[in-house]
Length: 497
Image 1 (cartoon, rainbow, N blue to C red):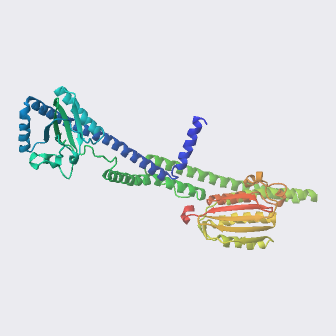
Image 2 (cartoon, rainbow, N blue to C red):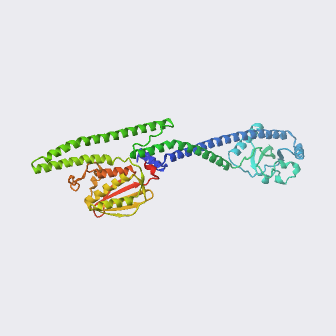
Image 3 (cartoon, one colour):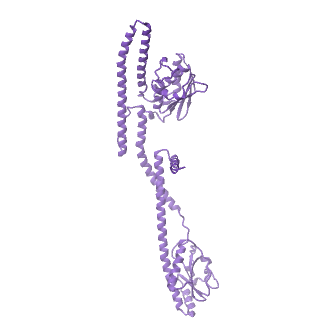
């Protein structure tokens, strides 16, 4: 598959996953946008906090490292016999933030911690002590207070007498990690320093997204979505009005025009729609005037020609002449009937389909037609005269070509399906769409000699579509034509007005 084909398939999949309504798509865009902005801002904030924390830790580590270097230089300057005297005085005084001892060997420390903070502290200490003291044997580690050993005999820090000042390192119950630095004073002598860095959470695992941040992000998201929904509703309301007006336009050209208010784009759309409605109404009125004028102008010459035909001496010529005039008169009346049939200017009311069908069946039985009706249906919002004409056209058509019609009603919450079956010759599949065109009658079964004008099916489909439904034709099982009429149930009567 080519790259363009993959992109097209991906776009189709994305389109299927999008909400069907404009409001839903706006909400999805806002949610994705807010979440992306929250994520980006949190990543930037986290990076800045981490950089600031590392800079603070680097500065603090440098200060403590210089203090350790000064302590090392001080003990280097003391004679061996005075070192323990100074250490005893320091322990008796207490209050020092360092615990210092001189050992004969480097003590093993259970090193703890990991991550960039520890690496920064260790690297800073090693660099400064190496530069300041010109030594390489520098050991920098972190230990837990409860496992820290401080003397040659590996006495634990917590076992020392309180007067020695170890309480400054044992900060229960916090138990922060202790920094241990060991430097070689001379061969066989190591200076041991333990201290606590005055910065909290050196090795604490930080949650990438804490509960407080989640709550703050959720509050921001809900606030933005609430305000966005109000704005989206105000923006999509004109589109809803436009959609409702477009539906009404097919049923009532005299419906009130749209209000030309709101944002510039909405006003421009409303102006264009109202202009279109006026032009369509003017064209329909012009069409009605044209057909009325044609009807008036044709009736006079037809009547005059009929009088002259009656005066012919030859009976055969007179009969053929009158038949041609009858056909011409039928065409004129059919054209006028078509115009009136497409004029649906009546109020929408609740109509009972089964009652309407039973009334039509009773009238058709008087003319020898047999109609069998099955099923019942709840009332539906429709224009009664238009719906009656639609069903009458379909039933008359079925009875004329099949002599017998079977009607079935199938009711549903969202639609009404009316199925009409005749036992006539049917309609070839290739001709089923063509029969809805005006003045089309199929030969030989649907010839002009039947007297029909070829307008019934076209008018019926126009009426059904004006009600939001449609008509379909198919072969009936066992022969004949199956007409399926689907009417959409409206939420209320005004939806069709």
